[in-house]
Every structure is written in structure tokens, then in C-alpha cells.
Length: 125
Image (cartoon, rainbow, N blue to C red; front, side, top):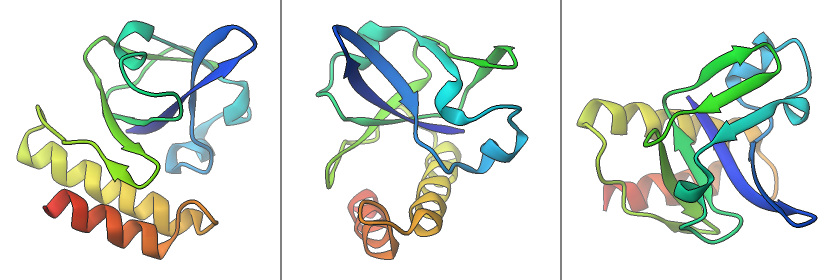
């Protein structure tokens, strides 16, 4: 599983993994140095800064991750949670657990115990 965020660098629309994720310890380089490829059109449907979740990650090379088409789901924009449709109940539970754990572990001005609580409440509906 991975959390990603859209951004613009120069004139290029890009996707980057959020730092401090649990899989980072298995990497041979910094997460910021990873090459991320994906179907940009799927991500560009949502505002810049949107955070996405993907349960599927392909690793064609040690410094390259690829998100297959249809594997990423929009998750958050600021404090707004996107409707999470198309996920099985099991996948939804795994995603919520991963995101809540990430937010609690991150514990900074953006993600912390309070944001984890708000996210869990929003998903529970």
C-alpha cells in the first residue's frame, strides 16, 4: 500500500509518495528519489494536492515504482475525504487501517491523532 500526492514541478504534473510510510525502511534510497510512473490522466481529474491511496505497487526497478491504471483512489483534499467507492469491504478496512496508522505515526501539523480521528469518522459516515 502507498499514499501519493499530486503536485506541479515547473510545468510538469507529477505524483510523489508521501514520506514516512511503513515500506520506506525496505528502500535502498530516499523516498523523494523514487521515480513514480502512473496514468497521469487518472490523477489529474482531481485538484492538485489531492492525496491518493493505492494498494497495488509495481517495482520495475529498485528506484522506480509504478501505479497501474485503475489502482489509485482519491482519498483526501485538505480535510475533505473523497467518497471511497469501488473498494471491497476488506480493502476498505485495510486502507483505513493503513491511513490511520500513517497519520498517527506521522504526528506533525498535517497528520496526527486528531486528523486520524476525523478521517476515520468521515469514512464511517
